[in-house]
Image 1 (cartoon, one colour):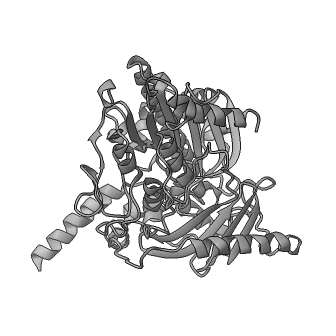
Image 2: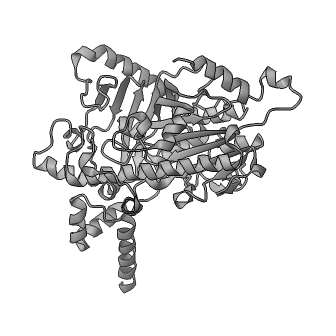
Length: 505
């Protein structure tokens, strides 16, 4: 990549505390502040990534003044396992945090530490959230014992951050992790769209080819893009604050998604819309403007890069590597999908940016597993499920709704970016398939859980869906027609009904 070596040299010179040039100075250079902006349920659906129908001027500017990565992938397409891997810099399977919403009372194995602990030991103030972003951006959601604030020793104290909501000069050097929740599905989607001065027009949208062209699906997609635009304004607000406080030049800002978009093939699935995330870095002192990198990057590498930027040696237990290290050369990102609410999956993947290989060890489980999360949070699923029954989906749209899924999937991402053509059964690609099988076997052997402790959270979603069908048929019908009826609202009514039923008994 043009100028890539130069940026490595600049970054290492400016932000590595151990450099010879720094040792020769009378005073140690100021450590950089670091802000990690994490948009929820966010694929590369930004204008600077070529996404049509959406305007993201602040993130466009961030990319134009920094470096944009085209091939960044999470190691799990679901929030809590993905966040667990990033919080430790280690693949979630290795730390036994790979099952969604599980092991919440189980301490991390002693060999692992949250990266915020390493930053604190190096003199950083660690901050969670921001007072001006939607719902304050304080989500953590990791699958090991933790508390938001307080000290950490991994035995009796499990705090991840020092403070919340604000960063000041007095906090320097500081690390702030700010969640941009608005892109996560929720009842606010309609409200934000209604308040938008320029809501996205559903009629002029460009939908992926695996999505059915239906008014309800178009409206849902438009609402999502409305949230993306709102989130972009939040990013602009953060940059403005840095300027006003005189911190802009010495602050590294990172923008990513925690997993892919919450829609067909996205969040929860090992296909590209579930794993590929936006990743942009901005640092006036150390990153030359306007760079674009095709390097293959795992989300755990972003954690390691933060540690490296703070002048800390990357621990050997981390599976992530510092991106600007001269020896960085990741060939594949190893993805895993395990427990997701009431559905226990067992799927693995590797992607090189050019090739994507997925192995489904439970092919008998359909993509559309009718789990409660999909029922409440995927309008397109309901609409397309009915169209499938009526035989109205085309060959690109059918696979998600088939009763089983293929044992193996192989896609050539450069020729087939929407993964419409599974080449696993094509004899012309036997050599590629064999190679990918061997490559993934290496990861399977190297990345194994540190323990077999398994304490899942009991999910109430299935009971809520059953109750909804039986007691609120009109609302259930609206849901089937592609209308979001509000999971929290329905759950609240279900809890009240259940409580009253117990009292009567």
